[in-house]
Image (cartoon, rainbow, N blue to C red; front, side, top):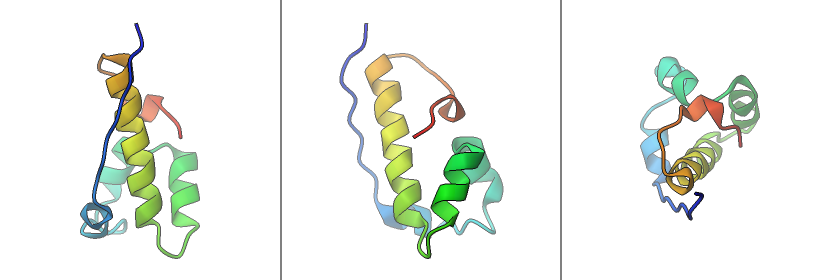
Length: 73
């Protein structure tokens, strides 16, 4: 059964975790294509936050645990 998933996150959470110093964190959550897309922007953090909440919403809608990297936004 598939439900509805909703999530919200503050962009500042990602800004506080600069990519260069927290690369492992980002690589555990985002696929290579997602990382490339986000990092192609001058300010990647709104893009990271948007993808993160979308992934969380998918997981909630599915109602089961699934690895974040198995979902690509």
